Length: 100
Image (cartoon, rainbow, N blue to C red):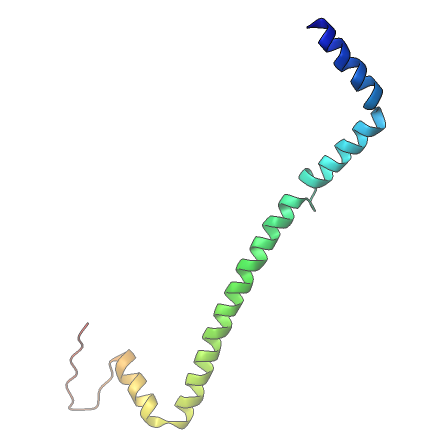
């Protein structure tokens, strides 16, 4: 057992030097603990992907409402349909029954 430890100690003194340890520690620090580390970049990329999906969803919704707005400004029947369906408005003397 003692001979094995002695061989490991001799090998480590021969191949592992202080500059090598400093360089390895620096690389580990950069990769794991820095603000620009690999783990942070993966986290940032996930956030960017989520925000891009949200932007796409909001853009699609905006286009839908822009098209609806354009149609409502030209078509009075569409305006009446929306007002009756969404806001349950009625003409005077008219009875409206809502079924859910």
